[in-house]
Image (cartoon, rainbow, N blue to C red):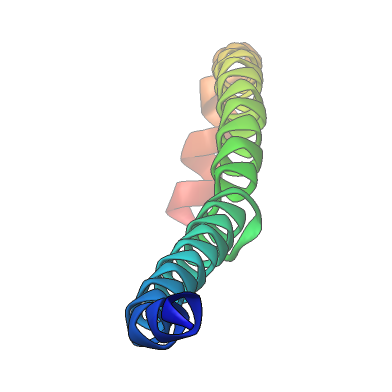
Length: 98
C-alpha cells in the first residue's frame, strides 16, 4: 500500500518535471527554427550574400567597361585632333567669315 501512496505523492512532482522538460524542448525547437530562418534570410534574402556577390561581380564588369571606354575615348579624341590639324586653316577662316 505504501507503494501506491508513494506514486500519488511523487506524481505531481514528476508532472512538473515533464512540463519543464517539454518547455525546454519547445524553446530549443523554436530557437533552432528562428536561427535557421535568420541564416536562410542572410544567405538567400533580398539583402543577402548572393546579392552582394552578384553586385560585386557587376561592379567589376562595369569597371572594366569604364576603363575600356576611357581608352577608346582617348584614342578617338587623338584621331579627332589629328584630323583637325590636317584641315587647312583657310577653310576654317572662310567659314567663320560668312
